[in-house]
Each structure stands twice: as C-alpha cells, then as structure tokens.
Image 1 (cartoon, chains in turn purple, red):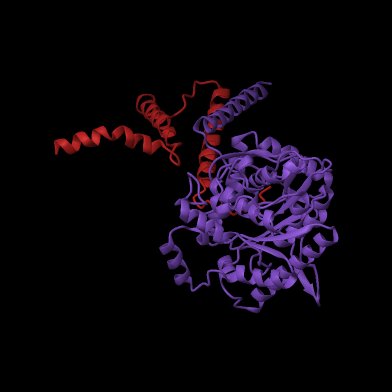
Image 2 (cartoon, chains in turn purple, yellow; image 1 turned 60 degrees about the vertical axis):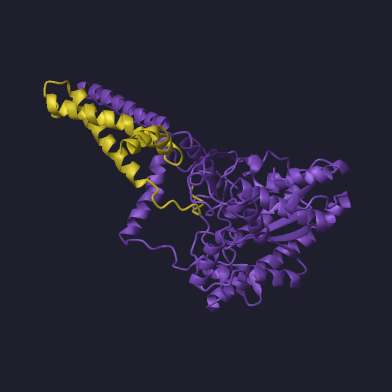
Length: 402
Length: 93
C-alpha cells in the first residue's frame, strides 16, 4: 500500500517535470519539424488531411493542409459551374511550405489569372497537388489516382533536379518505374509501406495529430528520426544514401548507362502523363525549375560553380526543351525569368531569415516571380484560357509583384 | 582610445539587438539557463547535492525520476539540434 502511494506520488512528480520541460520548450520558442505525412498504399506517402504545424527549417511558417491533404485552400471536389481549374503537380518547391499560403506560387498564379480572366465570368482555381519530395513516378501516380476527380482543364507539371533519379542512383522508399521491354511498369522491387491499412492510417493520424500539439513529443521524434541516424552516419554505421550527386544528373550529360536509363524513364513518365492528360481533354504544360545556383544573382558565384564542376548550365532544361518540342508539349523554363528578376531587383528568390540567401526553396519573392512567369505564358499560349477570354495584358518584366 | 570606447558603448545596444535578432532570436534563453546554473552551484556549495536520507521515500523516488528524465531531455536536445539542417528531407511520418 505504502509502495503504491510512493510510486504514484513519484509518477505525478515525473509528469509535472515533463510538463515543465514542455513549457520550457514553448517559452524558449523552440520548434521541431511537425508531422504532415501519412502512408498511402498507392503513392506511399501523402499529406495527411487537415494536418497542421510549423515549418521551421527554412523561415518559420504555420502550415495547414486542407481536408484532401493538399497545401491549398479548402476545395470542393466538383468545381462550381463555369470555373476553370488548373492542377499543379510538383514537389516541395511548388508546395511552398516556407511561405504563407496566400504567397505560394499556386495562390499567386490563381489571383493573377483571376485578375485577367475572371471578368469573363469564369473563375480560375489553381489546385495544388504538389507534395514535398514527390518524384516523377509519384507525380504520375497522383495524377492518375487523385487529380481527375477535381476535373482540372489544365495540368501544370513541374520538373526539377530530382526528376531523373532512379532507385540505384538515389535510393528512397518511393515507388519507382522501370522498363519491361518497351513498356514502363512499376518496379517489382517497390515495397509498399507497412501499416497502410485504413485502421493503421487512422491510428497514425490520431497519434501524429497529438504529437503536433506537444513540442516534447516532436523533440523525441526529431531526436530519434534525424538525430540518431545522423549520429550513426557520423560514426560510419549507416550509409543509406547514395553518393550520387543530383546536380550531376541535372547539369551534366549522363555519364553512365544507369543515368541515361533514369532519363529515359523520366521522359517516358512525362509521355504517359501527357497522354493521360490529353485523354481527359485537358491541356498539359511542363515547367522546369532548376537548381538554386541558376537563379543566384551573383554572376561570379554562378560562373565559379559551373567552372569548378565542369557543368553545362542548361543541360537538363535543354533536354526537356528538345523532348517537349518532339512531343508537342508546351515547356516553360523558369530559371531565365527567375534570374532576370533577381538581377533586375537585386534580390534573392531563395533563402530565408534563418538560411543563407540564394539557397534552398523559393521565398515569397521567388514564388511570386515564378507564378507571374507561368501566368504570362498561360495568358499568351493557353488555348483553354483563350477560350475563356483571357488575353495577354501585362508581361512579367513590367508586372508589379503581389 | 576613449573615443573608440565611447563609440563601442554607444553601439552596444545595436550589437545586443543584432545578437538576439533572427536567426539568433532564441539565444535569450541562455539567461534563465545561466540563472539556473548559478542556483544549482549555490545549492551544491551550501547544501551539497546528496539527498538527505531523512526525506520521505516518495521524494527520493521523485528526485531520481526527475533526474533521469532531465538527463534524457538534455540528450534529446543534443540529438535534435539539427546541425545538418537539410531542407530537402521529406516524408517523415
């Protein structure tokens, strides 16, 4: 009896101590990465519907997913009559976790297009299906699995420096495609994530949402998921990541059959996506967004980087250009416009208060500049928008950023 | 020399602001940390850190539990310090 009483009192003290630790973390303003993902049997990972929390690695920004698990405003499945929908498919650069929702590329584009097209009585909605870390294969799976239910008329497909990775070059838990003869098929080596049953996902959702409310739990997660593996790799116990440099794949002609094969898989995925979009009667746009060095306004830094690595500054974008021309796909190269904007305004389109300038993801200026470049192209060349009455009125170089 | 000293003092406010401005804006937490360290040092020199055996058993157990949790907490803080902040790490469940 006395033992039980002492044990319970000690337990109460321990819990009180943990509460003090939680309070200390809050008072100190310490934040760790929040949980936004859940497993998915098709794409393997997706944003959790209604997940919310802080993005802290670059800038500090509160993020909330909508009820469909998109970094977007709340949307209805069926568009309102007369509405034209544009679907964004991309990765973290298009998600824009680092900036407030209204400053993301998709939202700026939506406002800009609405400013010029909505007067025709056809509101524009830009639905953001982009997902952090999504590979081309995952983008293709998202397109087939989720996008068409929202009835978009235009699909904007983003590619960047992870576009040409393969399992051998850049191992990850994502699903991959491989060639089986002439056909592209899901890689038999793909391993669907465990615990992807509806009941397991529900359990994870409850736990992850709970975790997002307590910094102490986020601390434990950060320490176990990142800290421990980082320490282990520092001591040479783990080396899961490949030594392959993604920039080699972006700026350099393939140097091995594996790299060339990765390119071919990517091109075939784009071809299949284009075909899928066409079969749904929608318009397909390919947008390439390059590496951070490409929009660094410091010319000497850019020059030094390319000279040091013996890179061609535009290999991947040129190849996408040639591929798009061959397939009849509209291709927008964002980097020349982003660089011009950064140089003309002497600003960095990447980087945040807690990161180095010209590195990482696009900041508010970068998102806005990218959205305006895309808007200019759409207003100029999109048959869907022209059919709605959209016309090119303002060009990006003279457009005031919002 | 005096001129330089005055100039330095005049700029000390701005220097302090810069020290506590982002990304160092959490640095002020070092102040209560320093106070706690001084208090702990005072207790150690005046009372000693050994728990008196006359204390009730639940107090002793609580002290052991809290000490253990404090050690784990500090270890977790070090492990999660994100020295290698890679913004391109995704899909953490």
